[in-house]
Amino acid sequence: MGIGKYILDAQQQPVEEPDLLTWGRWMETAERHVAVDQVRDVKVSTIFLGLDHNYGDGPPLLYETMVFGGPLDQEMDRYATRDAAIAGHAAMLARVLAHTETGTP
Image 1 (cartoon, rainbow, N blue to C red):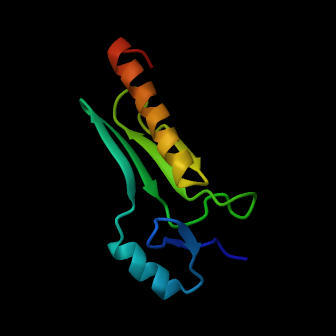
Image 2 (cartoon, rainbow, N blue to C red):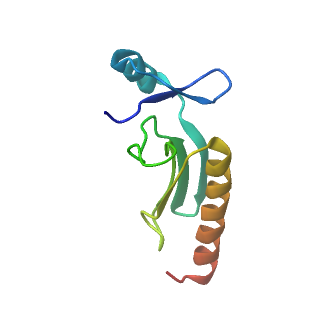
């Protein structure tokens, strides 16, 4: 059993794509960003991963929020749905803002 490969359909919903070449072509050109915010020198980015990062142990984890820079650099969360990813992005952005304002780790 391999890692599940997913693409987004026209409604931005993930669908499993068994064909490696089709998946690869889609990954090369797709807009996979869900949300991106910049707070001074810190970037919070949420993307559609295209691969199941749960490795078959529960629902597929297909979205990821990551922080680049600042005291929370490399903090990361993964999600099974786009709605959870949007909510998670907002929560991570709030954390970044709180740490940026206070200067605490």
